[in-house]
Length: 90
Image (tube, rainbow, N blue to C red; front, side, top):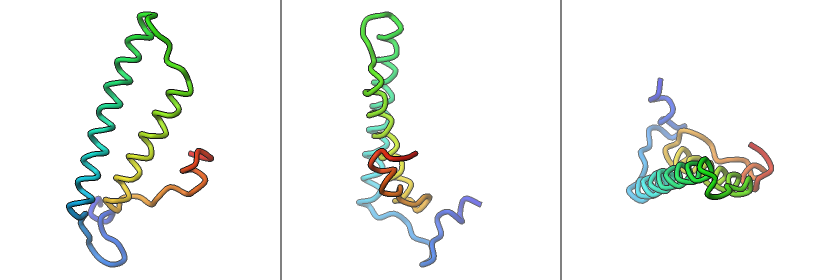
């Protein structure tokens, strides 16, 4: 079933080396952001700092954009609609 997601109308296409490098970069950034979120949650839990809602929204949007880009490169998903990419939708 998963093979169907990697097949396009033009046939099976695999990511180029540049695309794979971009995906690796995105995954590394996502992992780093996850570490930062864990550290921030620990800080808030110990009343050392505040994690503002705007910060969480910005991080969430950035993670979504990076994950979407990777899924598009892998031909697993379509690009986000323009309104959603500008914060106008989910």
